[in-house]
Length: 262
Image (cartoon, rainbow, N blue to C red; front, side):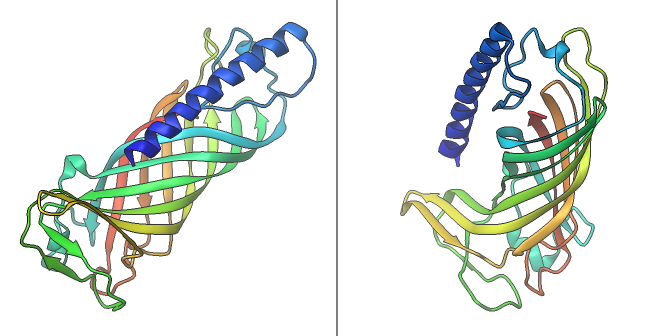
């Protein structure tokens, strides 16, 4: 995961530099009505205040809405896990949500309102407190696990989803620096890519196990973002359960944190 995030950030930086160069060339030649940019907003230049605010459709690759925050489990509306789910007891400050979008298609109605659909990836990373292993069991009645005789310096239980948000972006007028406030909200849909257990111990070293682990195959929820320029905060809540098992019925998750790129 760390290497993936580092690679994504490095790619975003490279694409932003490319976009800035392309924007500079366009300003110099003053040719062409449409431009393509990559990155959170590419890198803003002095011509940002002169951008056209006319309605228009846009579509292309991007690296935006990079989310980094905390995830909290809700057990039938309670922040305290029930005895049935106590084996999922987790370290709050090390249980996180990471995600970003890589594709976007949208329509700008005017300078104050835009609607877009995006595609990206989203991870829920649960750092377990107990030295357990969630097992690969086809039984849909409950998650199964073993209590292990070793101590794990890291015992992480995670899911990876393809995320597809449909967002409504309400924007303020540009200030003197060409930046604006964004108020974004809308539904988000997710398709499970994989589940994973990652464990580190003195006895076995680093272990990774990929499996569905009964994470719900299709999830849906709501996302809200508020920010100024390219920096802001986000909150996500998923309406359906985290797992397809009967014993974990009512176990949901909510995430909140910082976001970069609107």
